[in-house]
Image (cartoon, rainbow, N blue to C red; front, side, top):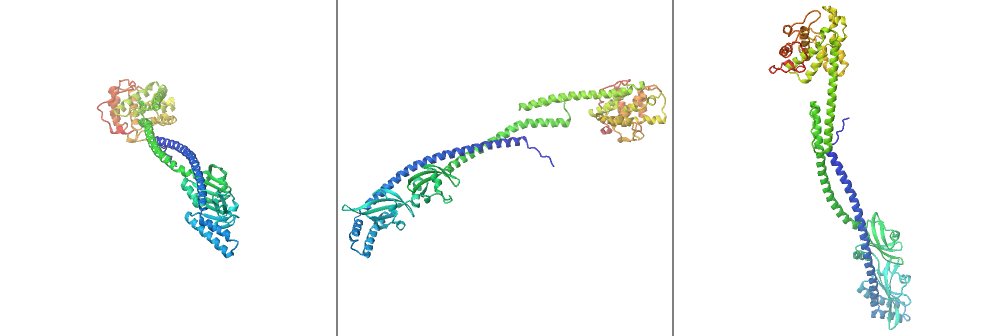
Length: 567
């Protein structure tokens, strides 16, 4: 599975900042909504209470107007005459005549009802007999209604019937000091009444008769209101209907008749909340924009020096150049501190690396000295071969890395001779064929020794192949021409030159010029011609004793041989 690429620092900062802003704004929005709703609830309750007081006064005025209106109607002379005629002729007339008398009273009532359009206009005899009923809801008016709700004459009261609740006012009908009967005027507390309450108060109206809803202006989608839920809040309070809060005020309560006004807190709060949401929306938009810009600016302020530091570290890693310290950017203290700490760490690493290299070189020198110490005639041979190889390498324009491999590889080129017995290695006379075969094994033995030490691996080609020849007659693998690494060919030439110009137990040392002539004689077959040419260029800068030279100058006019490109 592919490894997931982590998000950039800018993205992380932006997401974290915007998420924080969103959380804060959400919390603020919730608090604002709660506060707005609480404020609106208080305002709705106060408004409803004030409206309830005005409506209560209006209800009292309606009662007074109803009483005044029925008192005026009771003074109608034709109505009085009709009622009086009914009482006078009732004893002498037959049922048909009685019906005519009642019809006369009904016509007079209809005339009065046509003027004021009441719900119910009723006249009764002094004994309580209903003489006539007129009005919009006359057919629904039961004969027993007034009996079920007795009251003092002239007072408005509420009467509950099977068809609803009525406000009733009654006055006596008097002619010449004699009470002929009672005239009653009643208006229903129905849907029309509830709509009037709603228009006057701006709130919803609810008319209850005991446990039944008589009239309501509550929304149609609101479930049937349970009267006990409304009554449970008492005179005033807050009730929850279908998940919405309503403030409740009781307008009147007489007997089973109850009238309440309700105002939706949620509906009242909705505009205020909408305004708050709109305002918060603009604030949120501005906050997100500012937070985004600030996040981008801040993250880039931090990411830029981090990117610069990262690029410097990458470049340092690629070039393997750890000598030049990183320069603090001066933008972020922590990053500058990290840069300084890294520089200090690299200085420590370089010091440790130098110590390691010093120990590394010391180990190699110790191995070379241990080998040279076995034969007084070869003492210093490895050092001289190393110096000659470096001089040749510089003439061939090898880079510093190759020169370092060449220098230390030349010191170790004969390390395999440690495994050769002394009687063969230090034999004063010529070697037999068998002994020469034993000697020819020292490159393989040396390579095997170096393979057990990881940090010596770059020098194995020199140790193993420094006796290979361009004509393929070398050992141990018989490589030819360009198959032989250049560094191995260099050490081969340097080794042969030092061997020719150094004394041995079986012959004296030969002059450098003679040694060079011998190399030229075998160039192209036994020795690489370009390497021999480079040795000839380098010899003037080396003294006759072949003393170790750590830094021989590069010749300025020597062209770069094509073979120098071969590692």
